[in-house]
Amino acid sequence: MREALTFDDVLLVPQYSEVLPQDACLTSSVSESLSLTIPILSAAMDSVTELSMATAMSVAGGLGIVHKNMDVNAQVAIVKQIKSQSTSSVIGGAVGIGQQGLERAEALVEAGIDTLVVDTAHGHSKLVLDTAFTIKKNYPVTLIVGNIVSKAAALCLAEIGVDAVKVGIGPGSICTTRIVSGVGLPQLTAIMDVAEALHDSSVRIIADGGMRYSGDIVKALAAGAHCVMLGSMLAGTDEAPGEIVQINEHSYKMYRGMGSLGAMKKGSAERYFQKNNAKKFVPEGVEGLVPYKGSLHDVLYQILGGIRSGMGYLGAHNLEELRQNAVFSRITHSGRSESHIHNLQYIQHAPNYQISK
Image 1 (tube, rainbow, N blue to C red):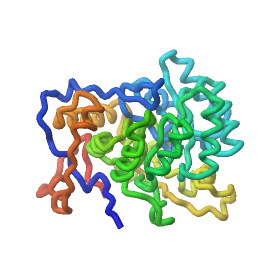
Image 2 (image 1 turned 135 degrees about the vertical axis):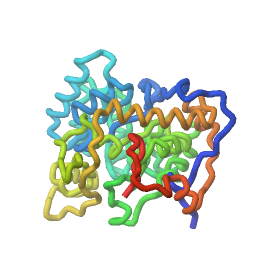
Image 3 (image 1 turned 90 degrees about the horizontal axis):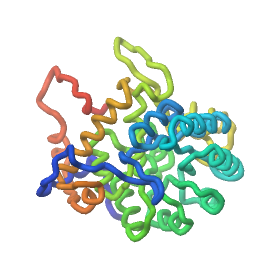
Image 4 (image 1 turned 120 degrees about the vertical axis):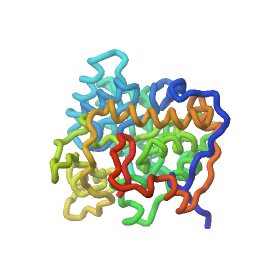
């Protein structure tokens, strides 16, 4: 039985560098035809990406993936509104599987969408593969499919011709899949396995879930991901759906997994291959509150600054050099404790760091 690792289990070893962080280039892509100036996608979750988030992500140079927990006409309306704002605006949308997923895909393509995401909990399954094959055969748009964690799944999707795969089963802060089903793989190992399988292909890798700090994003990109998809790190922003909640003079916003009961009742049960019967749902996620963070612009500024800092330490001018220069070192529990702040009281807040609870 082999061992699998996640972000907290490792650190990147600094390398000789002539690169200043501000000079590091963050350009990446989700397909050969769709480039991004920052390697970040907002998650296709009903507490993360709707019109406001998708618009702001496009302006920032990333990509927003509008969730599918809404009527197809509402999703189409968001796409049309964003595409009407600027000829350079880019937007993605999530679709399900089977005939309903294909019908939604057709409507989104007609609306001018740039990227379709076949969004399921288990991307290495027949219904997903059949849906992805049909979309790829019929529509000239970037196709992302997920989620997967294995080499076999990556190769299977590459053979179909998908443009990118989404990696991550169970790492999200609101996901309980690993506990409920006993299935998953620690995220760093999952990224490395998929990257190894796809090394000689043009298929992009999107790391989805498990990232709490900008340093985790650096590790994901260094391990082989071309982009990352963020949920909890963006859910507390102004651009995320939902109102600000005040509790004991602190501000929060609601955040829920698409496998939570609330989200499944709104339509995401299909993502987990469950029928739409609320009395018989077996949830694989929860809902809760995340700290309110203000504008997406300010949050991205800190995240991107952290990525550039990591690239400077590794002497990487761009993300390809980051992957090439990466040397990981496994650390102990004591090493992990040493990495976080310690021996302090009355800690002054930093915009890019908080102790996870």
